[in-house]
Image (cartoon, rainbow, N blue to C red):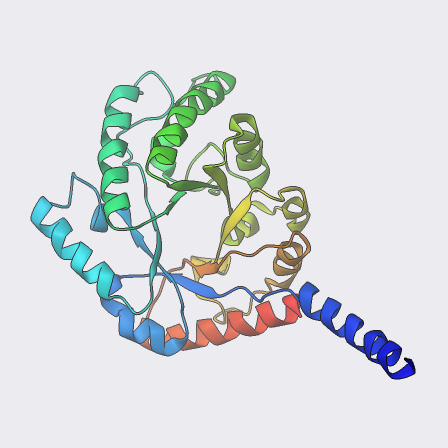
Length: 285
């Protein structure tokens, strides 16, 4: 009996510790599918491509889309998501907004995404959501929310989740912070609309990592780049650890994806991966 009790005493804490261990997020990259082998060799385990290059009916013919499908199926680094969801001329807010044209375009994009087994889009698209000068901001916000509800319902039909992204004020004049994006996601309150936390844009806007602590369980995706010049991690030595610690505190289980300006991918890609991997390990251990 003593031996049994001793075994239980020693074994239970061990199993509880194992159950509560937090998984370290994998690192992904926004890059061309053509660099698949190189990216895999560096350690990247997911890829984000652009909608205009892979899916858009405006820029990708039916024949090219079939070729893209073939490429996607052969990827070693799987295609997690696409970005640049909405062209700048398809306005979401203001007097030029054409909801019918916008929804028609996105229907075709979502159909193709489903065929390609793409289940996520990051929703930045700063040009489409830019508020025209002199236009009432509250009216624009309500206009955005109304159309975004319809887009989200359509996305759900194709089993797609949208991650609304904060974009800094040098790129657009609407939804510039995680807090603003979070407010809209909460207002719409649909499981297929969630939150992208972009640390580069947070740095540009001086937004504290503490906002991340309020976003559970809405945050499903995270992007990162250094503040100065949107350089890869490791160029200027930016410290992302406080942001990663906040992600750990909310139990974040998604990927952390580098979206930056590359000068030489072949020489910078491994450095960026190793730099980010070390910071993530520091934060999540």
